[in-house]
Image (cartoon, rainbow, N blue to C red; front, side, top):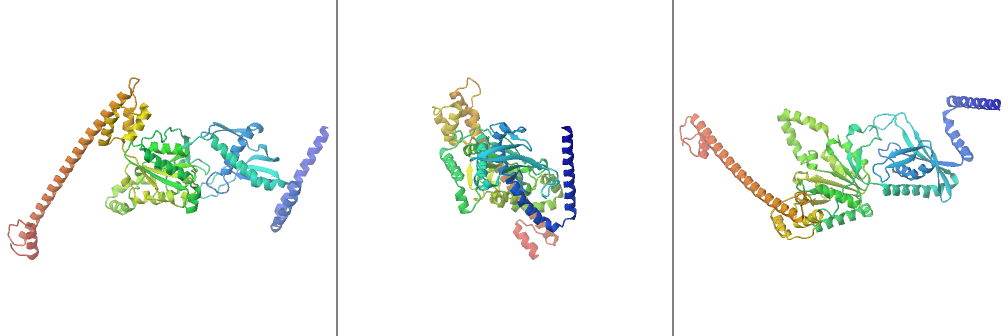
Length: 527
């Protein structure tokens, strides 16, 4: 028996050696022009012997910059079957899912699936190319993963038209069911590495804000909700009018008026992810576009305090003045050098990000800007069509106060409400300050105690506002008086200068009117 096995292995080794020799001879001496037809006929011949079709789904097909959505959907679809059939599994911690650990089949594993009585095979494979040819990324050796679907050629039509679509739709549905919404922040570009590295980091978005808890007039809330609903149902409408499926919101108002809470409430209402874009970590416009590509649909792209993010406040009209100032004062140019080297995102690049060609990569996105000083922003940045809806987040009114009283004290009415209403009409106080005073600080603080505390806070704010107004008026009067004195002193200097020039011309006069002095100087006439 052992001798027979030894002979078998010996014969097999001889066959392999012969095949390798023949292939080497074929590769070296056979004319290249004849290889194409021979390979074509060889494949046709092989199809009779091996009547199966294979379809590959690569994770990053070709030179694409973003992950293949089909690969992700297939991975999710196969995860349940992999846990019961595959012998070798990979466990991945998924932070944005209700299932914290996702199992998938390891490389070179194979599982079976059935669709309408047809049996198919799925296999996980990978290849390692030598270099990457994409000029955007450095050349490096990276593993390329893909799933391979195998089925009999007699079922080509039904599997290509129905089964693949079924897998993709089911995979996406599973992702939605298990998914937790994400709050993302962009990583500095020096941490991006290769083309598969993550440009965004994220945590689970768990902010409890809603329109019910938002301190705002009910009419304004209803207007915003209707706008969001119309946008979410507007895919066909946007296609019809030839615009990208996106919308821009500008939230402006003093600090503490609830701009961040508004974003959280909108995201919860729409069930969207949030991408918090920190512009100061973006090196240039190219990186800004690459970050946009990596965002998903059904998301808010937020740039908070955009007036502080970069020099985008009237940038174009100030550019010439800035160049002139730097020529006069080289030291100021050197002082700004380090700051400017950190980020070279331009206003033009940001405008293209909002509504240029790249903004159409993906759909169902809402871009949100927030600012405390809307008057500082370049008009081109916030015009209608870019920031479609401008929402003023104002100081706390009586209706907003009642929402906060319900949230914090669980009351709808109280005798002190009348006093508070009158005070709010006379005083500017932010919802954040109102909420802070309504929040009980101890177990003994009841509703009346908190309301009285709020009344005192509003009265204090009113007194401070009066003092501030008086101080501003005093400073303004002092400034005007100072300017008046400076003007008088300049006039005296002009009179003395002109009188001196007249005297130097040989005419001794006493001149009280500078206009007359000027005429004397010009005409050479002694007055």
